[in-house]
Length: 323
Image (cartoon, rainbow, N blue to C red; front, side):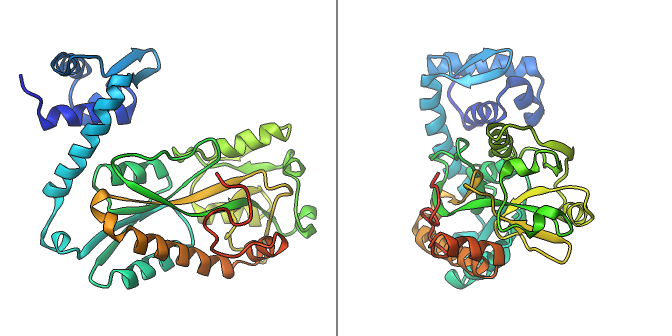
């Protein structure tokens, strides 16, 4: 038996899924068959790639060594297999992003930075999906977010650069008594019903829950949803409050306020396939310029920056706490 690409894909699937059972479902094989294949691969490699317990699998030190090299090999092979005439000529850029007002200006600036490229865009709430798609060669570049104590780590499968570090604000009904304040304590919202989304796989809402715990309460997560329109309607109708991005648009029925002491932070990170490394400076410049243009138009964010002497577009901290 010789080591083949399918064996590397099997190892990558198990690592990405975190369990043999989930990997078997993703690969369309039975769990016993995948377990047997994993044993054969480990015998071939001469050591255990994973340890197993009731929670799933974790890579051994040897496994981390194998997986790092497997991902590099597979990224290169996937580039080769996915390449068409346009992509080989540098004319197709598959972009992805989480929901953020910077997305449209980012696409505009990518098009300006790479005028020969044909830009496509995919958005996802589950940000981990975007990371996996870049790592697996299904996207070329993606704007993702992470949070303190949940930072995205460097990976041989993609390059990465920080676009901005910024606070997370809160959105409350404009009719709420708290809406007239310049800023709020997180604990001021302890008794309010919250809109809390399902996990994005990158640390949200876990970062929110951890900050609330430090503030002495657990948010009453009455509504769990990802739809932006429904969330705004719930807030505007007085049914809930929500954490929101610093750029979140206020309105007649929604007030956007910073939090005293800035207990919540997020980091915007641009990641790209290794084959785009030569374009990385232009991609990062485009993303940072897009972020700055959006920040300038946001009243709450611009006021927050002004109060702290920050400059819009300072990607290394924005006058706040770097991750």
